[in-house]
Length: 325
Length: 268
Image (cartoon, rainbow over all chains, first blue to last red; front, top):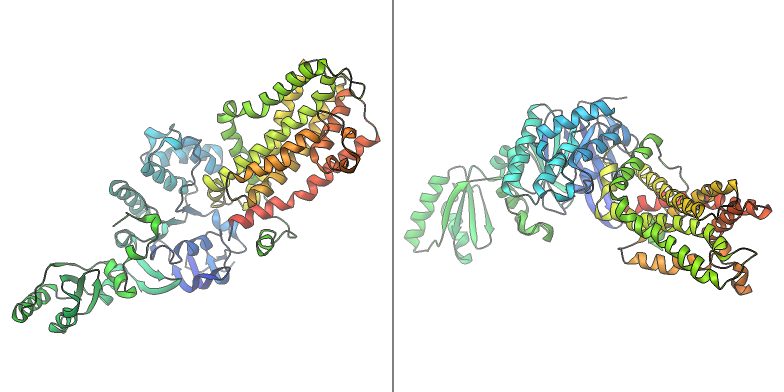
């Protein structure tokens, strides 16, 4: 069995559904111990990619190896070593929290005594001990997500796959999940995370790819991407459309990139304060009113905006309406 | 027809089945059953008991003898089969559809070493088990009524088991193409209820018009009813062997279809 260092290695993988191309020949590799992110709006091809990695949907073309094995031929062996937190809740609603963990351990053929021991450890780790006897149907969304994450740990996975792990959660519940994921990362678990929350990607991911319409737009660490495309700072300005070009040109030497965001103009720069001063002085001289301005650190969302010309929110489907970051 | 072709893709290949994991899927369903059986036993069990009562004692007063038997004696063995049929078909339509679509239980299972074929095979075994269980309980009722005339009677569990497996297969085929819960009404109204009425439980099929007398022969229920009656009375002959062969053959022939169809519906 040929072993490579990479946990996941995707070469030119394609996923087609009838005529629709969901993933169009992407390449990436996940290294041991890292948290690798797939960032993009819904419908970008993230879930399709992830489902191929855990052997749920067949790879249309290309080569996909997990732990050096081909997922198309060795799915059972590979699945024994990974943990999956899928986007949809698929816990057993009729069973209790503890029973959910025990039943799931059975699918990995974990011996009963060991399963019991791990179940207790997971209840402790996910802070679910008080709820152990509760029937899942009666749990809140946040608790269910914690159980879903805990359940994915029952086989002590070498690779943890998280598909939108915090979508639909309130900020408190989301932070709780993030905390646990950071602990797992410190313990050396390799993770593959899909998200459309930029904050989640910047908080957790060592490296990420930006996927859009089935293709990779960019690859790097969150900071690299920010540096490369937008610089450190973002200056949001309320300017009428006709004046936007003139405003941008007024301090061209400081502007790394610019974008329109709704009614606002966003200028990206490594020297935000200077840019702000320059633009304000110029606007005063020209008598152009700035209805609004705000200087803030640039973030991954800006990178995404820059790369695609649209915001993540605008490209999300109704499923996540109302979910912000 | 592209859709039918898609659903049947891979039907000639060997399924990816690992029995130790099939048993885990079966046990998961058993675990849930242990919690919910009290609420569910009503539909599948009490209803046939009511039929036995109403028809056997009510109608039976007016029917002096049928095929040389008292009416309740004629009726009871058939109801063992129909009780099993209803238990299996409800479980493998409404129950399986809930696990497949609404709860996404199947998705959760195949995120582990369990394969989709293991999941569907586990479902078939569970559906078969439920049929046998309800058949057995009803057999005990028939026994209590003093209607089991032969020690061979207990062997009704063999035709009941084969028939339940066929109904598991057929119901899962329907479930694999069902768009929603409402579509199961068609399944019950068009197939299950007519079968219940015209498969020789309430009257011999010889009473049917000659032109359609072959129809019951096409149903699994008819063969199980005939075998049950023969076993309960201890009167089997060459035709009993024919019924048994029919059940074995159809159970084997239909088994591959639900495995491939449910998989093709879910995995794309």
